[in-house]
Image (cartoon, rainbow, N blue to C red; front, side):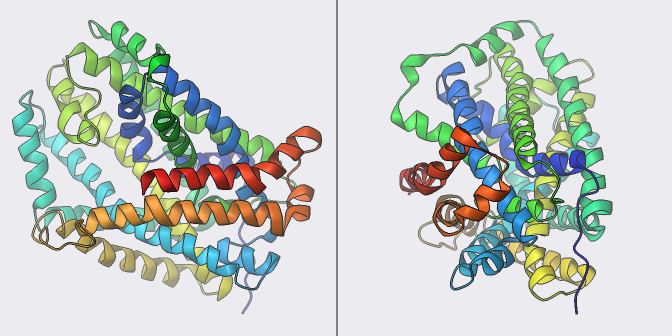
Amino acid sequence: MTTTRSSWGSRLGFILAAAGSAVGLGAIWKFPFVTAMNGGGAFILLFLLFSFSLGFAQLLVEFTLGRAAQRGPVGMFRRLAGGLWPLAGLLGIFAAFVLYSFYSVVGGWTLGYLALAFEGSVLTTDTAVLTSTFTRYVEDPLWPIASHAAFALATLAIVLGGVEKGIERASKLLMPALFLLMLALIVRSLTLPGAAAGALAFFTPDFSAVTPAMAGDALGLAFFSLSLGTGGMIAYGSYVKQETPVVRSAAWVVGLSCLVALLSGLMIFPALVAFGLDPAAGPGLTFMTMPVVFASLPFGQVFAIAFFALLSVAALTSSVSMLELIATLFLDEFSLPRRPVVITLSLAVFLCGVPASLSLGPWSDISVFGKNIFDAMDYSVSNVMMPLSGILVALFAGWRVWPLVRQHSGLTGLPLFALKWNCRLVAPLAIAAILLKNL
């Protein structure tokens, strides 16, 4: 059975969908605290440099390969090269499946906290109470799983609609909503007493903090904040029409992704400094620190609702791309109908996410290589599978199918020469450095 391949209805829709894939929860909480830990503006400069060089090049390659093959990662490797190369696509898809399984759990937390924000129960300046609230929530055997199911259902509802009527249409609504919510929170953050000092601290470079480890953090964040390493951008690129210029599209996606990261810093950093809170609070920043700010503000509940709605939207735009990526294996390789494929995959992801959720509570005594199930899933994907997949894609583009990449990339002259050696040498070595550092 053959099916007509879907495609994006517009270039704008493609850019917003790809940018939404890149803009996840990490862009909201991770960038501000990593910046705070690594010299402020100096880290930002390195992050932007790596994003618009190595990150842009790898993103362009993934778009180009997907568009050339008109297939997701497995089909792309099979159609363009064959042999054992499709196994590299399977690695990326398996990584995305594991990632989505525990990411959906965290996405569920954002929905749960959105409900708590409507109740007003997280509006307190007592950090001990907030810590206790978060601990009780994630350790509960019921509510995190229920919110995980709700998040998986929301993702399913979008992907069921297909590429143009589902993902693209949702991206055109969710991405502007994301920016509007961020801008509203930024305006409030910057009008707080002492906020200017926080903004200045965020952007002022401390070049004494520049070390090889710091550069490695900037490189890793630049690479993985663009949703590279699973083949998701290959899948999105496979829906791009041949006449769509991928160079400008890739530049727009990188620009929007970096803009969200910078805006998240402006949204969070000045408010935390104004209230004397620690911007380097890490993941706890989202659920255990920011509510202190909202509890101290007039109309704080409104801003708390806006903040957790923002997190939910950011989580959803990324999860949609993960589910679509996994689905391409069955849509492309077996020509199965979309509806049963995405419903079955969503159920499988939900079931695989349940142990990750329970490992933070009733199953916390279960250890996998010295980690609980949630952390083991996170570590294996972020530190092993995604870097290996990224290296294989770069080497494949630079050595195995370079003539095709050269033909379809839209580059000429020096930029094309730079892309070639980035794929052949620079990107594999850089990603390998990230892999070794994290291991």
